[in-house]
Length: 228
Image (tube, rainbow, N blue to C red; front, side, top):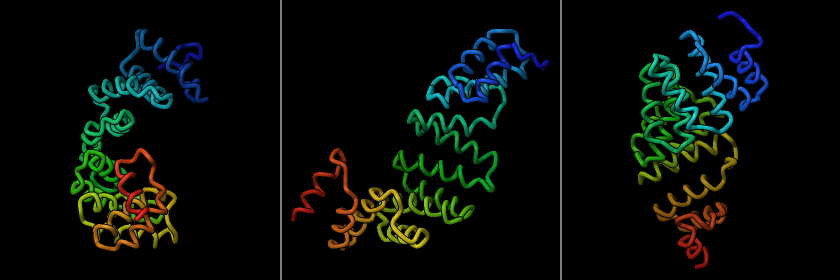
């Protein structure tokens, strides 16, 4: 590619560099209407997809991601998975994260974590637990580990494995030295586990700390429990 600062392609790249994503998309779209080499078209679509994603235009970002993958850019599976996640297409995201893992199964804790989250969102809790366990085997630094333990704990509890869930939540507390910043999720799920295991007073304490939103499916039930 010959550098031309006045070309739409270069203008698109420059606007992206200064985080002017809408203007970048505009010029990259004009560039793609021109006669580009395959190399330049790949670059333009990569940057336009990224800019659309940064601007919150996830469906448009997905169109370019689809084209890129169809044209051999397999490193874009992770990006497309994230865009699918943003549109709440958790099944599609799960499929793409699986592709990422197949391409690089080792030292890829983040993809195991992300796929585990997709399994969690689609209520496939056993599969989620397997992926969170795989993620922990690859990455257990405290800041990352506490997040993975948190997710696996929630998956254990939603799968009915209450003691295992409590054990993971204890790991979270041990790592951070106090209750994590996401107090609602932590205390709510721990309260459910304690309730299921017969620790009524412990469950009530956690439910009080959780401050459960009014629109939560269990809000009314727990409100009545706290009144009694």
